[in-house]
Amino acid sequence: MARKRLPPLNWLRAFEVSAKHLNFTQASYELSLTQAAVSHQVKGLEAYLGVLLFKRLPRGLELTQEGKAYIPVVSQAINKLIGATDELFGSNNSKPLIIKVNLVYFLNYLAPRLNDFITQYPEINLNIVSNIWSEDGEKDFHFDIRHGEGCWTDVYFDRITWDKLLPVCHPICVNGKEPPSSPNQLNNYQLLHVIGYRSGWQHWLDQSGVHHIDVSGGIRLDTLASAMRLAEVGVGIALGRSSLIHEAVKEGRLLIPFKQEIATNEAFYLISRPTTFENPDAITFRNWILSQVTNSDLKDLQC
Image (cartoon, rainbow, N blue to C red; front, top):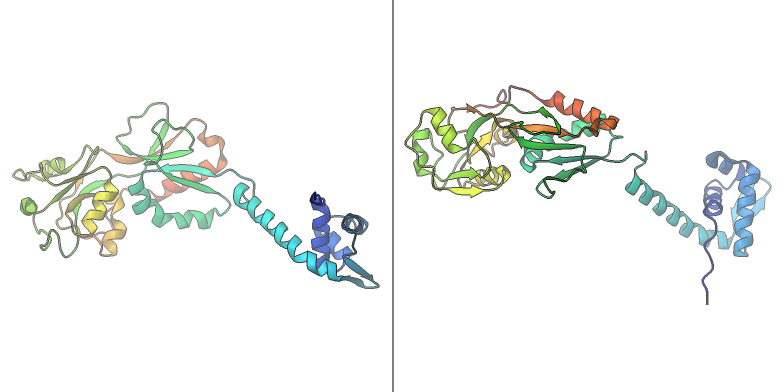
């Protein structure tokens, strides 16, 4: 047997709002229609279904038994439709701001600050994607927060960190021993190396004037996030970037064992395309993130 076709949505909406107010006049105010139009739509629904949904009373309406049975189904369906529409397309119908971001920068710098942006600009929808999941040539983004030396072409970029390199480790136990008190002890500990970073352990040692440490061993990792996590759990000593270690040091998850801090030409950059700033939300995000930038990354840290 063929199923009955769905009634027109505007009829169902008129029924749902009228049932909420039990008054066609009040329903007309919410729906921005005339009282006659609301009444006509409800009558159309009743005729379509072949039942009365309301008893018309001198001072309002009363749901019939059929109306009482139907209203929960109609209300639930309309609310689901409203919720799905809002989730998929946004309450303001705005497209999300797409931000690709280096994972270690997101975890240790952007995430602790992001609530400030959300609080100030709740109307802006963000779509944040770790760039470990995207192709290098992918262009479907507004911003790409990337680590490097600022040598890219065909894109705009703003430098957003001025980092110092600092060794970091577990505050109590590293490789089964107390943390080192001098760089000269580093041969007794496992060094954590990050592949692809130009300024690594050898650069830090040379600039610190320490020349007898063997950097050929240790563990090599493809992300700084992995190296910092291994340092947190006492597996070895990593070279942290000053912009990324504030929270971990302040919370006691990482220790800076000695004071030598070495500047690096590598930094995090906010990459944008020529079309990025056609979106006013992109201008807002750029202004906000640049307001977070500080050259004094170490001001809250103590060795």
